[in-house]
Figure 1 (spheres, one colour):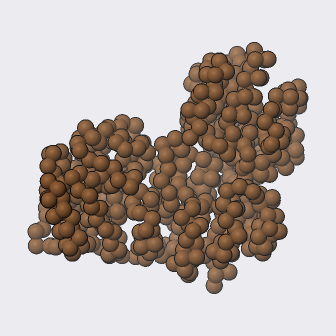
Figure 2 (cartoon, rainbow, N blue to C red):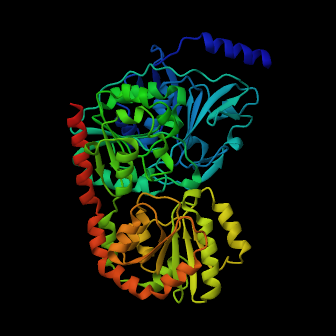
Figure 3 (tube, rainbow, N blue to C red):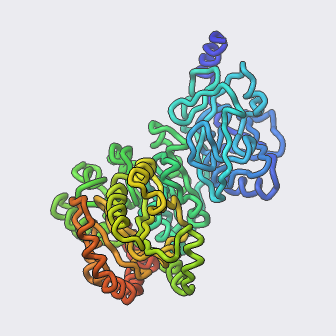
Length: 559
């Protein structure tokens, strides 16, 4: 067997790369039509009813049984496959890690070479190299299967390659032949680190939603992310012409080749860096050269000390066209510490979906029904943490405060809404303090404004934030704030007298909480009185106009 493996390696390395692909899709005609429409820009890809043996092309089959991948997942899979001579690709609709994938059956997830169907791959002596793509789709799928139960004997290499009886991964080739997207509006490349469930991503989606009549959007994420971080990919449906999970599709060494291809297809006018990544910071000079004719707008700083601000002393960052500061502190930091001209900075606060919140406000409060929906006791007072469970947001500090408050006030229970890397530590802390029945964990809530109707106070204990979107939503629903002095939160809490701001550094908050709680009715009254003023100020429709001004100024400056 070792001799066969070595022979296969040698053959693969000498064999000329075939850039053309034929793929036979055995599925409903409407599904096939969607795939064809999504892939028309790939000239060296043919979706066929029958293979044409006269054409020099790699031949693949996709034959889903129950839940075919959506058209965006299919296009992403083809983009990856066109650059690398793989025996098969597996597309997972969830962010589970190998060997678990999100699919109803292996046939729904696998695109395989004509001679490499599941039965052939299953044979002990088969030799194959596949690739696993974790691409959360527009249609949520919760069902998962174990790859190893369908294809035994495979090994995961470099996070995504699936090797069986072979030690060789085919090279990536930049030979994609493309058409140019027929854009009728200006094209914006939206480039976040990933589309996790978080404030930055939610803000990005709201702005895209409000500006979709003005611009076309193509979303390109830069890094892999974990299941605990969640995904908002499904909200991109109909908001963008395409989205590409770049780190799932290609390796870091292939990023510039892939970006060059996407640039040639979509011909972007503006690059919106709405978050950042280590790769991008390390390669920003080359990135600027690649997009030398595009206006680049950076919105990647969310604190004056921590995060991407730490890279602002590098040359590349000063070659961008405009900078969005999401609060006044960051604007001052740009000017005073990093010598960025005030004329190149726009202060734009995070936005909220005011339409969704207004709709929720118009629905009469049914406390019993909402509490029942979330497993809460309608006779209790509830204080909440809403956000990812990560070091930055300091959820263990919240658990300590909640424990002390609950031990003194029997009419209280506390809630943690969110999931993340610290979930296990949070669970352990809750159990260690015998708070399992008093501190409720809700990993995900799709309609947070609805939950705020039964929340008596929002507690924020983050080390740093730009301007927490959860605080904006809470204040817009008349919920008082008890939080650390992050971003510009204090400006708005003090302006409307709707809460109390505490020290970031002090970790024992119970004394401050008791003082806040004694004045609770005062804060609650002011929060309710000013809720609509806050909602109007942070309205996505209003703030989107500022983004449009920024994009247009960046284009003007570039010319």
